Amino acid sequence: MEKIIEILESIRSDIDFTKEEKLIDDGILDSFDIVSVVGELCDYYDITITVDMMEPENFNSAAAIHALVESILDEE
Amino acid sequence: MALNSLAFVAFLAIVLVVYYIVPKKFQWVVLLVASYGFYVTSGLKNLVFIISTTIFTYLAGLWMQSIRDKQQNYVKSLGDGVTKEEKREYKKIANKKIHTVQVLAVLVNLGVLILLKCHGFIFDNIDKVFTLFKWDISDPLVNIIVPLGLSYYTFNSIGYLIDISRGKHAAERNIGKFALFVSFFPSIVQGPLFRYCDVGVQLTKEHKLDYTNIKYGAQLILWGFFKKLVIADRVAPITAHIFSPEFVATDYNGSQVFFGVLAYSFQIYCDFSGGTDITRGAAQMMGIDLPVNFERPFFATSMANFWQRWHMSLGAWMREFVFYPVMLCKPVTAVSKKFRKKFGPHAGKIVPSVAAPFVVFFLIGIWHGITWQYITNGLYNAILISSTVALTPVYNKIAKTLRINTEAFSFRIFQMLRTFMLLCISRVIVKAPSITDAFAMIKRMFTSIDLKFLCGVDGEIYSYGVDEKGMKVLFLAILVLLVVGILQENGLKIREALSRQNLIFRWFILLLLLTVILVFGIYGPEFDVSAFIYGRF
Image 1 (cartoon, each protein chain N blue to C red):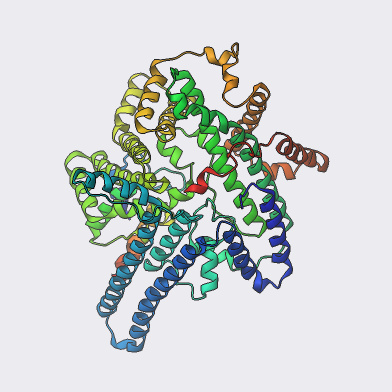
Image 2 (cartoon, chains in turn yellow, orange; image 1 turned 30 degrees about the vertical axis):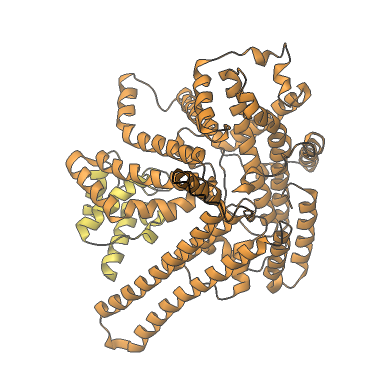
């Protein structure tokens, strides 16, 4: 979880990712930020995040992103 | 059958009566028969294309599903004797096969769309090249008329194929139910686009007669008629006049162009969103919730924000099936990462922000029609959006240096006006008689300003096809539109607010709206304005 927040902060240092719960729904992160996040996550965890995983609920909070990464790691 | 015709209202009324009378399990059959009945009114020959797309996409969907089912059944049959790695390998092989079928099926669908919509442009340009070698190439499809709703049902079909490939939902096994998804009659004319997992499943569900749905649906239809008949069709002669080759040949000034583009902005918004309101209202009366297509685009504060408010279903389609795949493709992410590491997070954002909008807006340009004007307009929008992302730190720095309060209401007004001006340029690019005329008109908009024609002293403003009385009606109607827009922008849900009012007031408002439509609506016998602009696409 800490690593996820570290990655998110490296892309958008102006956001408190420990508190935000609606990163996508409230338009806090835009599509371009998400792609940067996905790139970093794929590199760090050596996972593949596919287009069908690009759902708002998977990126609305640091916890949701953590859960997504965990589920991919578990499947792989 | 036009959506804004009395025939459509009568047709919808009959369909609704039958829809709610028959046993609920046959409701989807009523919709299928109605959809094909509606489609036939656009020409019997058109059926060939929609039926071909339906059968082809249906079979491709089943093929992909059978590959997935076989793989899953095979893994199941192996029981515990299969390792996790082996399971993953089987899945990978199946997904590769599914992906191949999907790509081929999408290419066929796209090929038909491009051939039917763009044959004129393609053969015209091929002919120009071949003329250099004194060869004559004529367009073999010159007599083919683009079938009604071609872009809409093709894009919905492509979305269906990609969603199956991604495992978002299973293929529909009932060809009748799938045919309804492709041909659903209120949305076949001009959308909105929708996905099988959202709307397709609703179409074949059983729906109870619900008073709120009937009431809200009818109100939305009425509002759609107001926008289309009282504003869009009334304003159409002004647009037709100012953007005609005859007008462009005169010594016009930039203010006249600006007046024309202002008129065109209201025309295209009221035409397209009015049609969508009629479509969504008709579907709501059947208990079917179609996606929202517009969220007051006049209040957009940036071009990116405008595209989040304008033709939203096309935007959602592009985001899901073009934007994300381009942004996540290996070359883009690899270059993005290199930039991020070397020049910081913002530089990493610039790479996808340049790549994806160019692909998306090039496709949106083509979607409207392959002409150099639409392609130029697509590129214009892509440049604006890419540069916004790239230059955001610069804008922030300027605002900080000049101590501009970007949260202030006045700054929002500035943003809205700036966006509207940028949109005006976009509108001129597509609406001018030619691309050369477009550039000349844009130049004059900023260099030749003369507001004398607005004064009406010599009656020039009333010589554009709308007389003084018509102008007054237009002014009031647009005022109503803007007031409603401001109320909605502030979170008011108009139909819900109206339903909370007393019976007399409620009916007064609705009857007033109906009277305005009947008295001030333009029914287009003398000029062909009543056809929906987006019906062409």
